[in-house]
Length: 336
Image: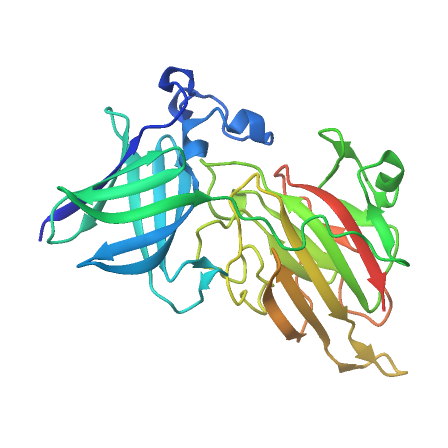
């Protein structure tokens, strides 16, 4: 069986000499999108949508290209479109690793009998040809959550709005990068049944892997953690972004690329206890990640490790510190 080689030629609109390659960088972590944008790996990484063309028939396809550091990449294709926009869990996916070569191409090798396809990325457009035949045409997309920038309704508890005063609503509350909330903070306000909106951004850490790549967490009542992680392009396990540890993986992995703002919207009903302190009804939660439901009226059969034990009393919101520079903004809750 021949090796099918897909070579993503780096024909970008900017002058190639002005681009900083990750290989030449000592930096392993970026928190500023403007600085990351100077790095070749970051420029290539992202989401693409378009059509695969075979015998005149078009099949919609989504593509996520993940930077793995040092000019290495992983591409994930989704038949039907991107996760949450045409592709759902169980639909076909394919994975292939690629690497930047000395000719300035990112080369992905696939097992195939049909020879070589060469794809060129220019001005955010990707076209692939086999010989003189067009086999794929895609465009880079920049998705934004439908709930991004949601304003707190009347009666909401505004936990953080970018001001120094609102940072005082948190234990260890600290503003970074001008108007963003640092991770590892606990709300002073406690909540029982409530809804919660927050926006978060993971750093660009291409050399990191697994739980060391943009790790934080949103703890509802400090008892139930919904993971925050750079899980762009991953399967969507219960220890990845949107997962609830040891309870449930997300319905779909809606993680966007690192340094892209993302949202969680939570509708939480606390566990119920009798007069003797015995739990008689489990907590339940619905969570939207970037505007898409990833947990639908999920029963939380137990608490998750890392903070407080389950109990009958109202409790805090905890935004976990895990050593990675995850930041937050526009955090508010409504008590039910």
